[in-house]
Amino acid sequence: MSYRELAPAQINYDEQLTEDERLCIEKSVAALVDRAARNTARRRTMHDLQAEARAAMNKSLLEVIKSGPEVPHFDASEIQPKVTDRKIDRSGPLFDDKDLNVEQILKIGGVASKIFAKPFHYDWKWSNTGGTHQLNYAADKGGFAGIDALVDTGVAHIKAHAGVGVALNTQTLNSTMAVTVTGRALRWTTHKWTALGSIWNGHAVTEGGVELTAFVDGIPLVNTDLNAGKLWRRRCSDGEIDGYEEDPGWAVGEPIELTWTMVPGRTYTFNIGAWVYVECDDGAWGSDSWAWAHLLMDVGALTLFK
Image (cartoon, rainbow, N blue to C red; front, side):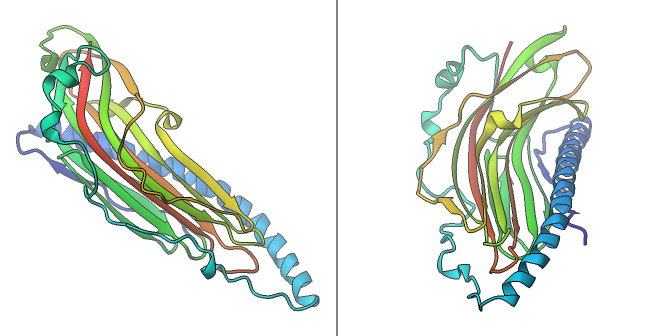
């Protein structure tokens, strides 16, 4: 059985972009998709190897259970985390764009050389899934990205990304020479998650975060370490249950940045994306494991410093 189902990337462009810029954007998003697909494939390959060992253990375990006194079937429905508010939109408390003026943005992390405000040049999203799953995600050039991912049956996983970006070159910074820049993102996020690992070798994983990436002519140039922008990770197994379901409100993201050198005659793309990963694997004697991730992100501005 194949667990790898890669959905085509969806990209929405600003009408003012040139054909060359659109091509570079398309190539950069394709490179993001390819990297994520390869990482997920490696992760699922390791999972499958572990699953073979678990299947052998489960078979022996079930034979022991069936040969002894009757054991009640584990029903997780009574303790499964309650998933609430799965809407993917901007509802809820958020900053007022009118309060986000140029002077304030210039002061964030120093004096910015270039500010990209809403709407951004493009938005994008894609997913990599396997097994029975529920996924709802969205992105728009107004700076919003949201992902709601749930797996609760059998062996399943979801890796989903959504974000926004801009296209630029040295002329964007009024430079005719090579220039080294540092890119940052002013962003707000809010998230929730739950996980339940069924008894007898069941497990569930939920994690999510944000990432900055930069490309030159659609070729990967530099990206932040996923751990730098990771907001949470939790693995539950053998009857463990955990969750973060309170309404945390919107929080300003921790500082993350990228530094790269731009040269004349090349087109660069600078992205910020939200991402989540969930997986579940049922136990030998019980109902379904469960993993849920809910992440919303609103980007106020992308800034460059030189």
